[in-house]
Length: 201
Image (cartoon, rainbow, N blue to C red; front, side, top):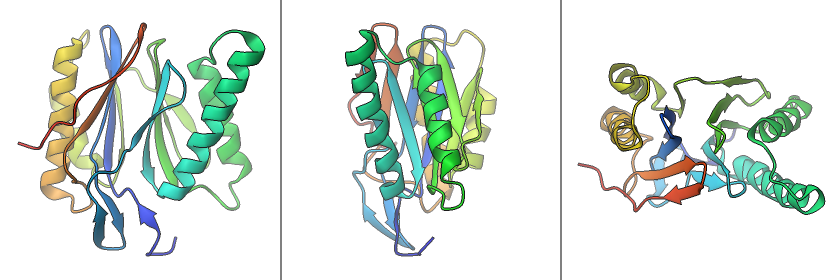
């Protein structure tokens, strides 16, 4: 990948709570060793019940997001029901694998209101995560906080705090993680809620 490609550098996490899933991400975009944007969105809605985090090449990730959003809209129009999380991750996996000779430089986390959380690599491999997932250059730093703070049947409130702690831990040591704050999205059965941007402490 060319060093001048706009990248999200990044740290993103997805955490399964007792009654929902929390996605969180930093907001810094980089080009080579430069921070070029401190207000970059790295969590996107696919439909009213599915959202996805991105790490890697912004251009590659945006192509995938637009494709999934369009397909989800067409599916709902044709079938009169929303695309399921499993169907969405399978479609995304097939797209990534079909381009493995010229891959999308993206690492993705996809989650849905049916309490399903998946992590995907650039070749289309995916795994369903029971507890949490992470991606980006600050993954190892975030993982330390997740391992320490995660517990079964964790509440949404505690999950939000854990997600913020994981991103903040990565920001302290990973030069590609940062930006104006932390974006947090909550996915529950009744829909997707985007919280106000949380400033770093």
